[in-house]
Image 1 (tube, rainbow, N blue to C red):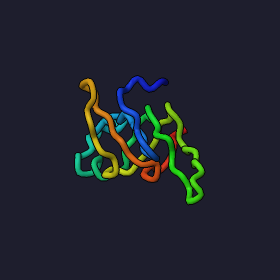
Image 2: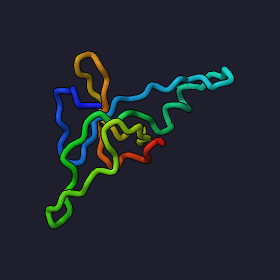
Image 3: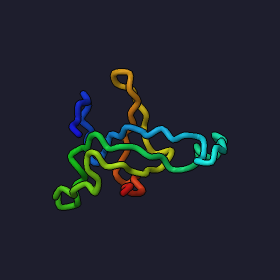
Image 4: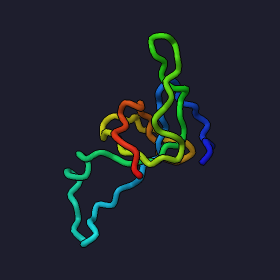
Length: 100
């Protein structure tokens, strides 16, 4: 997956395309918004910054890569729109895990 966005994140920032969660279980039970809005969110990494640097100025590589589906903290990302599409930008520290 290539970065076709007109935005280049800086530092340890990651641009994510959110995955919209369905508010219904497999058995057909609807989940209230109050429950789903408190849980972590999922998304696909579509762009990476240059990465963090340690105290010696050496670049620390990202743990995630473009195309990874990730789980991240609900209130961490900043939302933005570009070309009528919704995206999120967050720090790598806000990533909770990579979905295998």
